[in-house]
Length: 390
Image 1 (tube, rainbow, N blue to C red):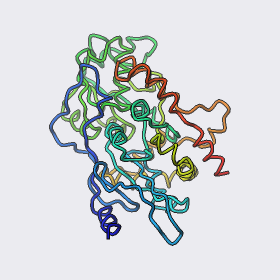
Image 2 (tube, rainbow, N blue to C red):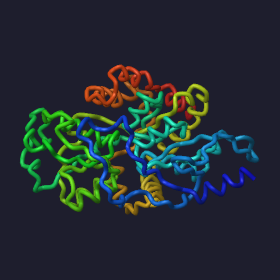
Image 3 (tube, rainbow, N blue to C red):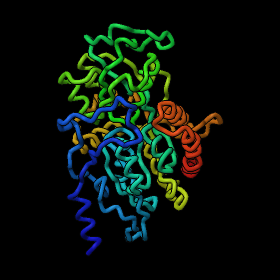
Image 4 (cartoon, one colour):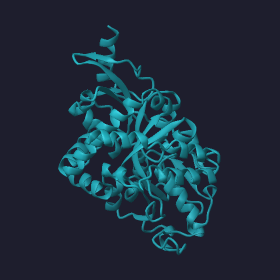
């Protein structure tokens, strides 16, 4: 009976996390609470097409094997977000690739990386599709960074309006000629972004390169959909966008004030895992990555498939993106070839260390935690997973 109730709950209780940002990611003295309006692009509570689901907080995430005709499957709670890095997880579940590998993936949904970090602290997931926001999980919750699958650098942009004072100055710092703004025009600006994320890093790195401190601007925490709608209605001076919003932002005629690419920071999306889970179930972590690498190889070989699956995933999360928009996003932020792990110069997580050092300089990560982040970059799992696929 308990199992039956749990199965029913998985179908009807798909609730998305819209929790506040993680405490570790808040900006200096310049952070303000989010605006009161309801996010317009927050994922809807729709039933997924396939796979097990739990709500992000308080769901039935008890980790027990599900017995099937083929034997016992290892339950793996995988945290996902309504963005490209999670498409492979959803596709693997829909195709039954997890079951073929002896796994039973249970997707736990979050809006962004901040709430996902907090949930790891509460022990609510085992593996997560994540981005640079995972740096706080690595620093404070003993997470491991285990694989990178998507190059998200080109789509991380901080937008300004064409008539903004910020837009009147370009190349103030000659080292970054494509970056807009000066200390006079950027100081006091209200920047809309989810704190503790790659977008937040973009904002603060920009402020740093212009010669200001994080306390010189006002970071207002808003999830991406909420921030986009707020900026659209005239609120804020800057909107920090992820790749998924680039097409809409460009269509509005907004200018990229600074991008992570312009600022010389390289970031990848991929997978993090709870440290204790890696220690106790290393073979499961390898099997999971085998499945993910298999999917990534399929997506690289068949771009139409990658586009179709991304459209499905976005729609399932309440975002009606058309195929052309998704195709442009994938061209901008492509999947990474798994064969890169064979390169003698391959090094996992360089971007994580850069991000950790940056937040340490801002006082948002304790300086000694940078070494902790570096020690939690574990490429052994993805390398073994790649070998197993040969």
